[in-house]
Image (tube, rainbow, N blue to C red; front, side, top):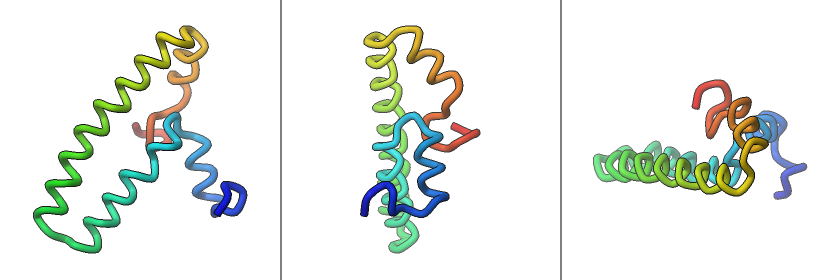
Length: 86
């Protein structure tokens, strides 16, 4: 499925987050938790969320070093993963 074929709400969400390529992975882990609903799935979800946050922050630091002020302005107006929240 191409981006143009994605549902409008998903396209809008992806366009309003700074890490579009990272949005789907946490959703997949959340779906895994919903399907398995086990302690192991919860542990994987929490551990991965902590790792994922570190990874995103590391990538943002590298992008800031590379692009400077324009990237800083971009990050100030666009959330990381959840529009309006984080």
